[in-house]
Length: 360
Image 1 (cartoon, rainbow, N blue to C red):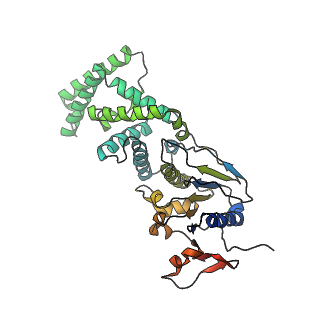
Image 2: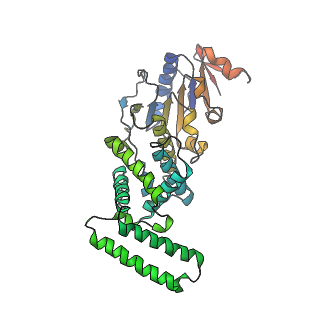
Image 3: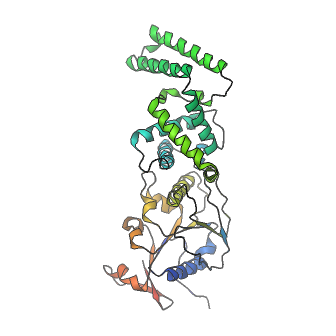
């Protein structure tokens, strides 16, 4: 006779308890019960424990892979999403040169990402490698006297435009400066045997001053040192259908929590751009709270994009606000009072197994 564990499709779950093996037992029951109803199952494990998944669904250990510039090719994103994505990506990148990026750093990098995003000549499948090459060009060209002089001229042009917004085209100084800028640009282009993709960027947004170049140099050097590990952030790893795609912590350069957070938010953006996208079932073992402290995507939007199952052993990882979006909370016997203390008695045992209680 088939066993009914009271698990339901299209719901999110919290499995919480100090007993590691009990948590895995419930997880396996959950996988066998509703897992076959999903085309995509992803399992992120940040605990470092031995894998004890024994579900009948095939498990494949997968490598991390996400294209953090993927949204560059989304043409249907609204302006709010685009600006949010720029800030999100800038924060993600800068966290690897400083744990707490400051506003000037964020603004400079957001402006650069905005310029790249708007380029008509930007190549498809823009990658981390392309980004580093662009930083190289900016840094190298900033050493050129012609380059620096060109920017000074642009600053003067911008100053006249701001001072005379309605008649700057009739201003004699403006005309002279535009002529000088053209000569300097032509001099640079025809005297340089190197390609200069940075000159295609809209320089009106900001000026590459000393502070900007210092930030770009530090960022470029850090990314160069990371080297091949960046490949996993330049292309999305394929998700194997009808299998458990199992990811465990392993990168020594990027925080796994940041990877999961970025993945969830990318999933939400992708969902917005694809009405036919099927919700995946995502398990996250060992962490909950840190993943949802986002200024870019609302928690409710993430829960709309995926059915999330948290397997938590530490009370420090529980987040009351996050769990308000979780449909079903499962506690091991020793923690059942946590769910029932301030609620009516609505816990139901799973097949008369007193170790587990479900509180809805």
